[in-house]
Length: 401
Ligand SMILES: Cc1ncc(COP(=O)(O)O)c(C=O)c1O
Image (cartoon, rainbow, N blue to C red; front, side, top):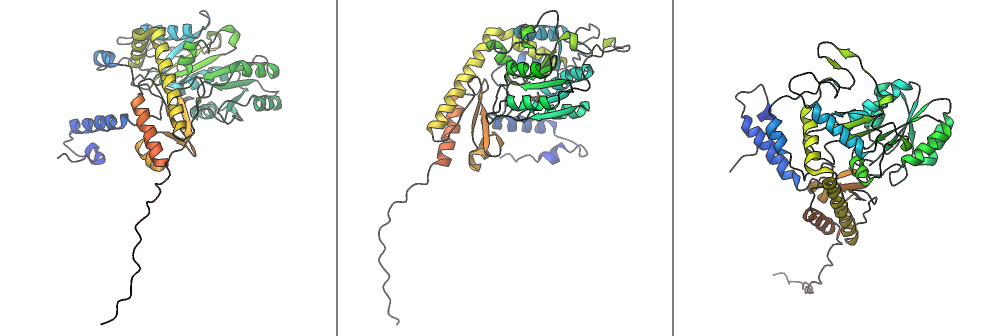
């Protein structure tokens, strides 16, 4: 019989010797055991990244500086440039007005883009909805900028009437609006056309950044998210570990070239300081490149379609089981009233008060969905009607002896 590992003791670096293999085995075993019931967070699990991890995972790949830099020994900037070009093409971004890099995640993408826009318009108020990711107000604070909160509708999409009212009140100041393509809880997509129209009415020339951490790639594959000239969108941030399921946190940020920051040259690295972090993960760029190279647009379109089909199936099954679920038509995310505690102990959902969600990312199976729905149905079924018990004879008094 194996004894459960006490992780705090086993990892304590002041104790030697340390059984490193036991610790690593434990981590893998725990993650494997949790995988089947982890359905609340948006990391795709269908792609096989082992070729890159095996071939490149054993050394440092540092894409320090700008993706266009060529110096350094072990870097993957050529792959990074290919990733940036593929995503920018997918978004129909003008070839002569685009720049971007592989970041450490959606958060860094938001920081990089909003930093660039803030540098151009330091007095601009930055508007974002109450359904925006927590990284957006954090970035606003980091920049020392002024943020303005805009109400979201109950389904998570921005309230454009409230946006117009907030802009009207601050006409004196330039404006940058952050739209979300795939809000964290309901995967709502703000209508960038409507935002642009409201923005132009009140602040011609204001900027529009899209936080598209989850839905950026799927919507671009549909042709529903474009950064062409007509879109009036200045920048976009996408997470790499969500739809592409890359096994290390990463992201992609794209900014119109005429708006971005042209950093100074750093002599000792012979690179341009254009990115938020100096050293950058070259392995992430290689993993993204591999995911794109091995599946192409058609393969990824197919993955998005299959995931949405499963999300539609999940919504129907939950509703049929008496647990009213809903989703936006484009979404992988299924929103439902928070199930009872016993269900949440087993299934890793994302819960915010009385609302929860599961996300049918590529790789989640119909079997997992069926098992989850069965658990919800069992936990919420009305208690069985008690069977009538045979009548017990009324106790007769026993005469005292
Ligand atoms: C809408 C949105 N923006 C940004 C982020 C942050 O992305 P990352 O975790 O890649 O930094 C998330 C993460 O869930 C998100 O849902």
